[in-house]
Length: 333
Image (cartoon, rainbow, N blue to C red; front, side, top):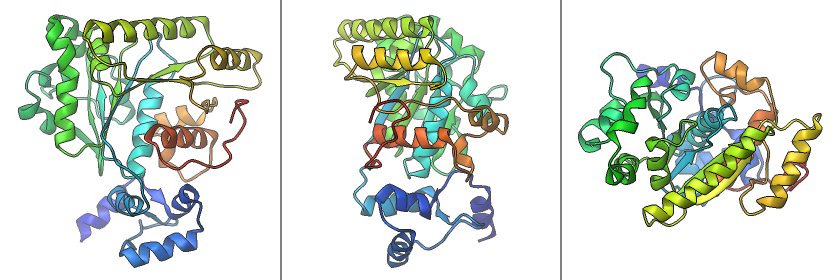
């Protein structure tokens, strides 16, 4: 009992009763009554009443949420445009909603690993160690962030993947095999943080992904990276005779005070209407402040634009209920 209470006290990412009500469009009193009927009345200690990820899953499953296995890769040949922020923020929000989630950090810079303070120690396996035999090595190589939220950390040694995945067959199946093993162990969502280059790790991730998210900013290099990424996804899918994954563009670092961001968003809406997410991620200091604490914005109970935007994004990505009136800060519904 004491161990469970300590685990609850240490749980950063849980869904509150108020958030469940907002998700489903019902009052907190209705949520509380539902939880009592289902025997899910063990709230997290503290001022914010909520459910652990497993309890949230049980409740939302009863309300019709589908927990389908999905592999999502975050790719852009340009760095610094939000791949890691999107990966880790999505992971924590998905876990709050009850998705058993694993991050595959394939970037040798290991930003996702650092964000959760889960850098591998000497001798700890990383992707380049496990991909050839995931059934024996993978699960014990994962680092637990909290209940139903894990990461396979990265380090500079993952830069050796360009040598170890030189065979086309290995490129096609390396990431796919690791994701399949995770799915065997009950993971609903695998989020891949890719390096900003067209190396073998990115090629293999494209082969494995059900969905590819391309974060973009306003600068010319970011837009060029988008074009290169779209071309490479098509080329790699053709080369390996694979169906195209679902491709979505996420506009990050939106600042309505800067004309260039509005102009860029309009251009993306015109040129890529079928790919662009219906929400842009607004600039916010909350992301860097959370990162300094080795957490994401969803560890805090305070309201913020970052939480609002990424919540809409995650609901859209995972096919969950979304607010009937999406905000118009980006000029689109």
